[in-house]
Length: 325
Image 1 (cartoon, one colour):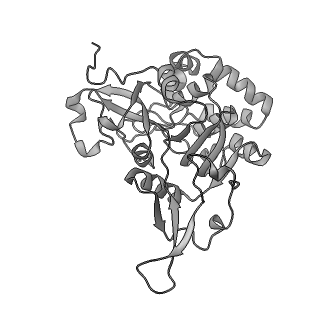
Image 2: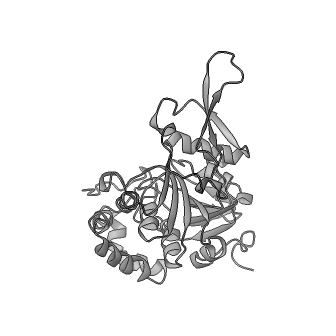
Image 3: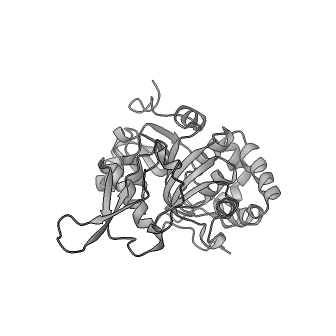
């Protein structure tokens, strides 16, 4: 019996979590947003294990998305937006992959992707909206007809139909639900009973988790039941939703985790430079992903000085005085 008997069977290493639940061809929903709370340690491990042909689905994303695409793990993508803020208004390897035709790609709006996960979380096959009517989003499709015959791919991007409750000409857009094989996310806390608490914005993480068959959560800390029961309205997911828990402090680096650490400007600037060049990017992967044997070794490579510089003020939630240029 370990330290946390209630979740001992769910407590896994990064290697175990990826090896057990993520396979070639898996449809994966990835949590976080641009340079905030990306499950980077999991993304790196997916790359190290050589997982291929991933069908990635997310409302919007950033660094982890770019790493997975750049490393050749992703063959299919459904997304609204991919960017790293000031460091890459459009994610660099993502952009190159689209321009080169290296991945199959379908785009929706942020709201539409959120609705699709919401529909999946409710267990309904589609969801109506007015959002997108009159836009190019419903005029242009990325997936070819033969792709739409495959499992986990919607047979149509959308359906425009008449509102059945209104006799007048009142069009609505029906969006297909998403039910990914696996949802991965990073949280600040997991309780010793398995309850997940995300501080700050949760983006579409909760809907993604509730719509997925399997949920993997990496976290900064595993905390006592007495702590997780304080302010229960702050908790995000109950234990029965979670299939695997991995404790990985700084598991979102170089992206930010509210109240723990800020994003790492130096590393994101380094990435911005190398991601533009294929050879330099390969060297980056060899050095920062394939070349480290564990997350602890990765943190040692980042260095204590760099980690100290991005340490967040626990009250404000971000690093005060951090040079973000």
